[in-house]
Length: 210
Picture 1 (cartoon, helix red, strand yellow):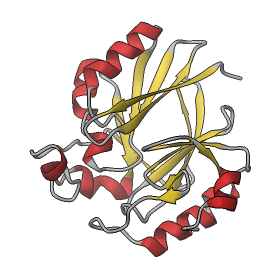
Picture 2 (cartoon, rainbow, N blue to C red; picture 1 turned 45 degrees about the vertical axis):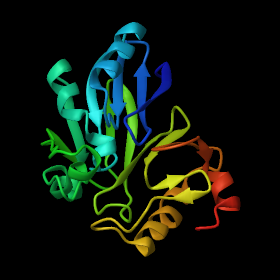
Picture 3 (cartoon, rainbow, N blue to C red; picture 1 turned 90 degrees about the horizontal axis):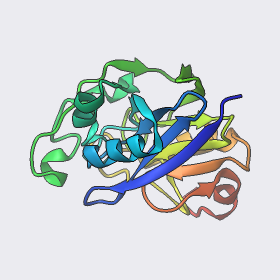
Picture 4 (cartoon, one colour; picture 1 turned 60 degrees about the horizontal axis):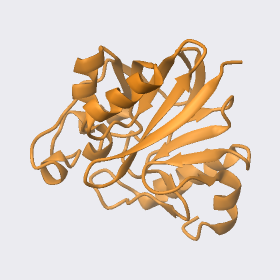
């Protein structure tokens, strides 16, 4: 079993959570949703003695992927996302960067994942869940070893992501959470795209959207 460490940085004007999931046995780290401040993210990883190998995106909105291109150029890390999210990653209007960053920000993924795919990255085991609703190709990453899931803007503490952006659907979003995420153990810690952590068990009981 890998020695895992989870850390976070709040980045950008919209205070998005950028997550770092490190395997401290080999000092390699996965960066999830570098929405902005790529140099700060890299400086933090270096301070911890971690090498960034992969950049994982939960979805293609600019506040979550806006720093991915710069971080890739600084580190050589691969950018990865769900296949269905490619149209947002390549379109500054769909990914909202022209509104959030006031310029066209795009990123071309090096690798695309698919629903149910089981990954081993830097010795860290993850499972990919396609959770459309906030965006068509939104996804969550579940790490059983660490007892946590990275939900992006699919699930928040007491709430869910917005569905009024291009490609959004509240019915799909609710179905994604109920039929996929709520099957995870109740004690699973949910590391969200904005705001505080929660657990699957808490959301089953207290989330009024669901």
